[in-house]
Length: 71
Image (cartoon, rainbow, N blue to C red; front, side, top):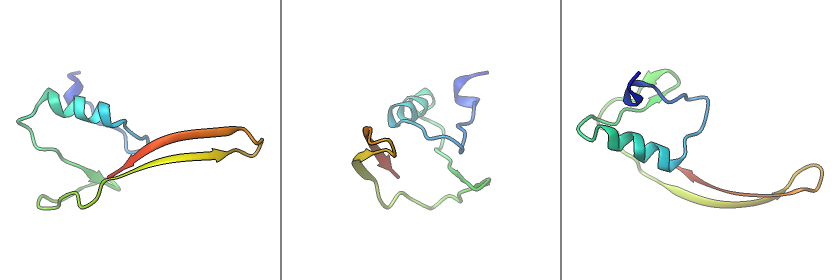
């Protein structure tokens, strides 16, 4: 299967680098998003992109840190 034909699962997050890589495979194709199994209609656009840095302690007092980008 061509990598561009393989859907990205909505059940898992995708790294920004992976998304950009997939887009670069076929730049002439439209970028289509699905939400709860339905295709988002054309005409919508991204209104926000947020980047966050997180630091936390888990229930065993083990430190964790990560960054996320929210679209």
